[in-house]
Amino acid sequence: MGFKDKSNYDDMGFSPPRRGQDRDRMDKRSLKVIVLVVILGILLCAAVVLIWVIYFSGDEAAPPKPVEPQVVASEVPLEEPPKGEVVIKTPTPAPIVTPQTQSGWYQEYIVQEGDTLESIIEEFTISRETILSVNPIKSIQEIKPGFTLKVPSRNGQLYTVQPGDSLSIITNRFNPTLGWKTLQELNGLKSENIIAGQKIFIPSPDAEARSYYTRFIRPSEGRTTGSYNQTVLYGEGQYVTLKGILIDGVPGSDVKASASGVVVDIANEVDGLGRLVVLSHDQGYKTTYAHLQEVLVKVGSQVKQGDTIALLGESGNVGRPSLYFQIEEEGIPLDPANFF
Image (tube, rainbow, N blue to C red):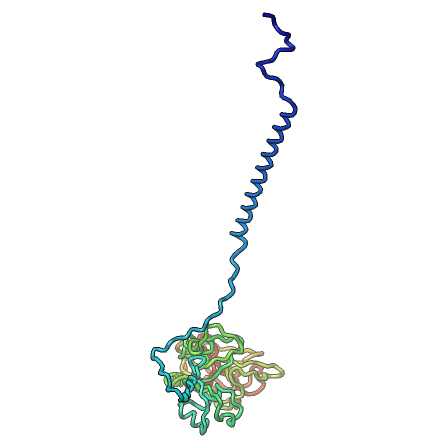
């Protein structure tokens, strides 16, 4: 058997692929890739739509459904009127609204026909001064039928808060036995904080408290020319807001101890209160006597109520014979007019 030429040798019976077959294979692969990309794109779009629906679309508020009137059947069946009869329905009377108090210290009263200020005072056992303090009445003629009055539950005054005031300062000044917490609750205040210009009702001290005050007496004869918290002309062109009272008097007249105590200070303020004496009393009280002509006691001296401790004068910058008298409790000035 002879051998064929190597150039004509067919390796394992395979012949090299043709160009047409390669192109067919490439087209099939491309088609698969395209189909796969399209499927992935569809899935991605579906996922995006699903996410948007879940997280971003939200449920739009459905329009409110019209409320259908509900007819409540009466527990007692209504009898139908006989035919031919006309039924007249009596309208239900409107409820009577009782005036409500705005806080715990007063009630509103509508003036009736025949009422007078005196009859209202007698009916509610309240003082004339209290009614006039609480209500902005310019004339008694305003109290006529239909007029609404604020009638406090007790005697007192309506006070306008001043700069620097606090509830404790106000109670110590006007009614030390009341207590600032009671004053807060009485006026319906949410806290102890108050502001200048605010209106606060301050009850008057009761009989027991007034007897407590009587242990202080007026220190000098004469007319009161300056009241507590009043701004007065002091000397030449100087205005001073008093934290006590100013009493005009005769030079050299007696100045007496307002209450029993001990002398704790003697001083001479040339440009201020002049010669002065300070007494200390029980329960944290202290009294000051100023513009004196002469001091007759010494620091440490024990004095009794009514003892002469000095002579009235015009030392300092008062400008005329006067006595400046001040009462303090634990360092807080009080209105002396409440004590005698």
